[in-house]
Amino acid sequence: MRKVLVAANWKMYMTRPQAVELVRQLKEELLASPHEAQVVLAPPFTALETVGREIQGTGWGLAAQNGFWEREGAFTGEVSFPMLVELGCSMVILGHSERRQIFGETDEWIRRKVLAALQCGLTPMICVGEILEQRDQGRTLEVVRGQLTQALGGLELEHGREFLIAYEPVWAIGTGRTATPAQAQEVHAMIRGWLGENFSRAMADSTRILYGGSVKPDNIADLIDCPDIDGALVGGASLKAETFASIVRLGRG
Ligand code: PEP
View 1 (cartoon, protein in one colour):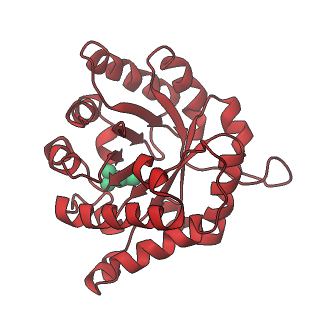
View 2 (spheres, helix red, strand yellow; view 1 turned 135 degrees about the horizontal axis):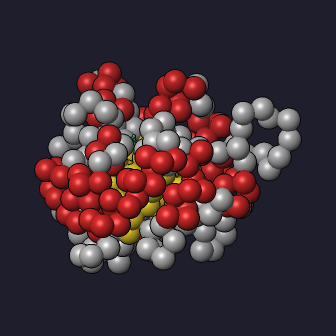
């Protein structure tokens, strides 16, 4: 069985005092009433250590929003995966559409990052998704399949190395427009099929595929009811304790 996972992508929001406040409110919301979903928080780099300290004992996971594939060196402005591990991260978001579109990250870069993250023992959360024009042209499945092939095709994965896929249609991120459950399920099912063809049935069955794109308390239940949707990557709605906690509670397995 795949445990439902709900991850908060705080993007470039939250100073450290704001982060502490948000985590304290989340603990009040979530720790009193048991929830089934696994919770992961992805604050900006500057708040990772602080948030890691605040979530000790909760069982929640800590994720970074990016990282660089080299372990160390003259790479001004970059942060390596061993540095993220040192801060307590167990996961890292890779290939987010904002990284692809604003910072020009290519599929080749994302592949190198996926490999390096896995080698450091981090679980990559690999983001894929089409832009609106591609969906309108009926090319969604082809685009997402291409991104999967570029990021993961032909990789020799050591036994027990886990990764997650986040299907995030770009037209749904931060826009208030969500994919319908049927639209999301179609892509999730294709992703699971691709994992089966390219790795193994066991890996396809165990890999969690998250949906991201304007997830809110009023749409999570229908999304999570879909057989191949195993959780959510939540941006805007994760910045308020009450809304994120509602999503976590509704994200039942
Ligand atoms: C995201 O940043 O990954 C995301 C899905 O954002 P939002 O929930 O705001 O659409």
